[in-house]
Length: 204
Image 1 (cartoon, rainbow, N blue to C red):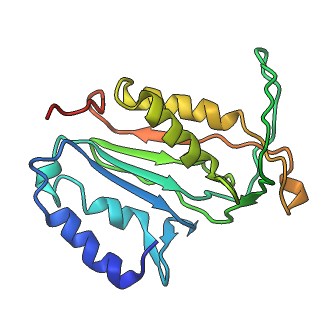
Image 2 (tube, one colour):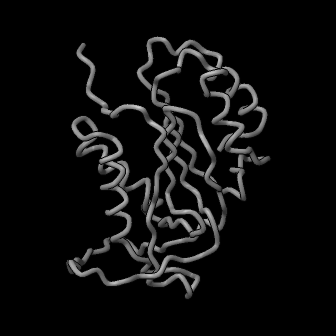
């Protein structure tokens, strides 16, 4: 994430700009965090301060439009343990590279948001979020894959549910932290949307 001076100028500019021609607002954070904050290069920023700039009383041109925040960061210090579902399907994956999973030891807490906000988190509250040294974070990998396959056809919260399932099917195979081996992860999202959300391609 960028430095504090860069964010200080970008945040008010984004919220005060006219979004009349926009169908929605999307903001993605890939960083570390702690408590209710997320880290920039040289400081930490409170998530609620960021989202608050885009509520209806601060950014009128986004009133009634979806405001989506995607946050890739840990939200606690617990590892999610594996359980065996009744409909388990065996599945193997060939690894071309040695792919070590790392723990992003940071925390981001859930916050209340106004109407038409959609908060998307890489992991449920209280748990570690995992990323691979070769491929990157599980959540962003699977979110991008599902967007590529269904982004223009499936309702977005339904797509996020597919992402939840796909991430939950992963497990930590290689990690410097022995206690993380075999552990799992499941993302979550909190929807304050007031209507269904589709990303249909615009006609030229």
